[in-house]
Image (cartoon, rainbow, N blue to C red; front, side, top):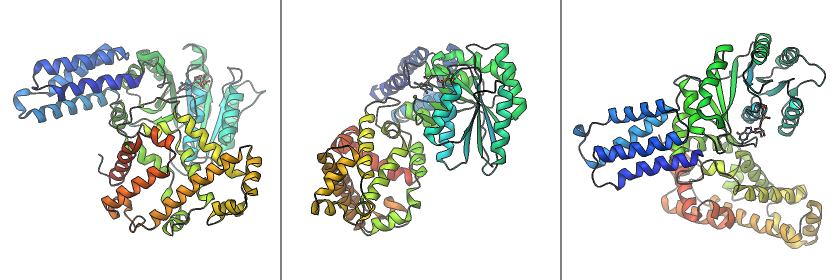
Length: 495
Ligand code: GDP
């Protein structure tokens, strides 16, 4: 069962409380039964499911509870807390230290997604401005080095490995020494896997471990094996000092709930989860936001993190221009780059309450492709055109520019024209925003802009957006609820 289904089933069960006229033992038991069935279907261990049921039951005292409203709320809160407990290992995860070399060694069975995850983690830290690199000490699987090399090159991450050296210990040691000398902060070592847990794998793991003395060992596990994760995690923990776990393939037909709860049961902190094959399909794992998102309650914290990652407010030049209602084609280009950096739309969308596409993908690809195409078109523009205060006018005055850009970017003149129209709408919007007093004052829009101004801004935003994108975002209503969430989130009122 996909995690989204699990979430939906639990949400439905919780909703049955709101629909019931009276809340009594029978209603509670029926709801708990539904939730437990869903958890078992997701391969959560029966012992854990039983424990959770007992915990919820034990926390509810009907005699003690006054009104119906309180009962519902209390039961729902208790279920939420127990679900959080189910995936909470109760141990704190290791954190790298800025300004020094942090060596991270990856271990796991072959095919678990180890190499892919090494690059995802490196990319994650690189985006947060850590000086990051990768070492391929997997000499067992043919092609592992090529895969790592290809991935790192694509993501522009420095890497180390060898086609000729067969000893993983030597490669790991050399790589770590080299990168430490060069003051890298995050040094990730990928090691070999085997198809099953066997002595040769553990032996090699230990040798590499002793050679590089890592600050953190990350164990990568495939969610599709469900609760079998528990024995695997224990076996690895016995051999090396596994400090953290990353669970991959939580996007698939996974027995994801089973995998997560099983790992939590071994008290190994889950630090990230893999939700797809792409380098961006990677999320930091935090228990509360995870369950909130599972139950479609949204993950405002994650959303704010993503937006903060972009450091929009540090872009003083842009803010200054916006204040004066200016917006060039290059500004638009940079904004598109930002959107691409945030990762696939679905990731962003799934963090917003009410958007029921937890970990489902596919439909956002069109928008990303469109965005890429628009950027390709702008790549063929001259600096003059990009930096002009009203770039679109240059093109209307001299139509030959359109043909030139179309030729240069391998697109149709019609497409260049469409881009200019889109730009025109953005620029108009920025003019409106520039005129809105208070928008750029400290404290942001939630403090300084009144509701009617906000509503106008929303309408303008909707107008300026590509209708297809707007549709994906749940139309006008979806957009408004997103804006509201942004505001509430930045005001810190979401906890
Ligand atoms: P390794 O042998 O452990 O290094 O495994 P790889 O990194 O080569 O991954 C094995 C396969 O799993 C590849 O096809 C990856 O694209 C795929 N994979 C890795 N992580 C994920 C994930 O989170 N979701 C999905 N759907 N596939 C993944």
